[in-house]
Image 1 (cartoon, rainbow, N blue to C red):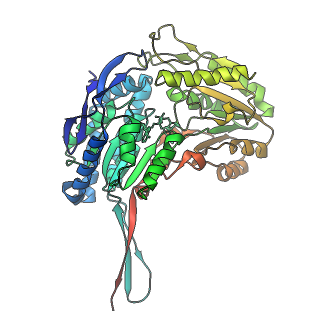
Image 2: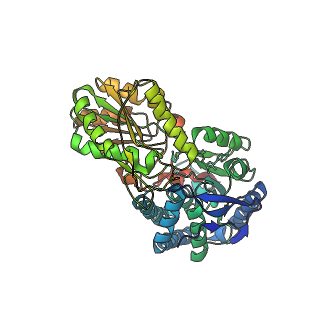
Image 3: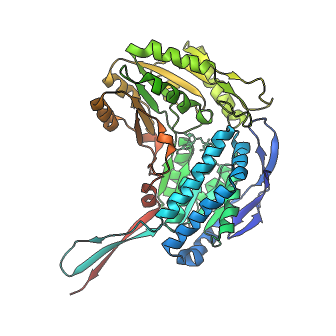
Length: 481
Ligand code: NAD
């Protein structure tokens, strides 16, 4: 049974009512209000930051790395023990197909397990220096870390950001998205149950411009990790700059997959489709552009169109190919892009269909394949954040590379080719934080560092790399004879 009424905020190890009232929990599958969550204010956020600061000087700050790791590992086990409850809450909040929600909970548990195991394996160094000196580096937590989470992958992004920060000994204040906070609140309770000391993990749901802005502009926050839109990312970086605080920004993308004449087309086809329809295209790393070489264009794009034409859209519980998008605003945004494509004379090659069984009132959009899009068109440049795949034709490798790198973004790129030399050239030349050759996404692996270049952001999360981004180095030089 999902408890969709979770109006408390987790501050200093206790649940307290939000001082800003409540925010409705809306189910994207049918548009109905299913519960309420708390709406944190600036005052609530301030209490959370103070609690986090105290915990660093108390029980949490005094824990050995191995014991922080044990707590995280226990939290991973608790996630698995509450798997169905978490998956149901994630599906309710986001509308994503049930199997996707369940895959996301598996990933959440993996983040806690991975960073639980890593907590005592990151350390400083001793450095060769002048005679009579011993010099070492101490790797230390920043202190209080703020985490702003979006609605598209609430548990995965909570896991990758917060688990790494806690592993390094930071105390976290988390602001989940107003559209999808239920799982963050459940994780908060599980953290209490497994014994996290008060203040180590604080959770303050609320609106972005209210609780989010209060957190990112707070003078006593030592690091901000933000995942969301480039526009808000700019605001976050500006707010942090006022106090000269470091930020990790995970922003949007317009990621390309390049399909060359010599590719294994049978292998590429299902991956190209799933890379854009997963989570109804609301994935920062969605493969939203496919660049197809002249020689196979008709054959490959024809096969893509056949696939798109049979895609089915429905509720989370129907568990079809594509779920609803998050809210009416997102639905209108995606539909407006499709209308614009039509109005500009682009070819709509195929569209999926909304299942007759999908509940009325859900926020559904049709997966859409658009052909021969000029590389400078809005559909080839802007992040739609919906199940809309833009097809672009290219002549040769140089042409493909120019088009692939020719957007403001640089999050992920993929290439399908059997030519080994080309694989290596592309791996180096593609402007992206991750490059996949003859696959895309590698199943999301928690071990794989992730982040962007250009307008896709900076800093890295996931893998061991995240531990360096959630800690800082102190150099200690000791003079002796
Ligand atoms: P958003 O920027 O509107 O919201 C993200 C979070 O920021 C939410 O928690 C929101 O409450 C908060 N927020 C909003 N205004 C704020 C403010 N003024 N100060 C502080 N916090 C504020 O983004 P969204 O619509 O939820 O997510 C979609 C975007 O996120 C897309 O652009 C997508 O590409 C990007 N994204 C990136 C990644 C990544 O890892 N690179 C992952 C997921 C989503």
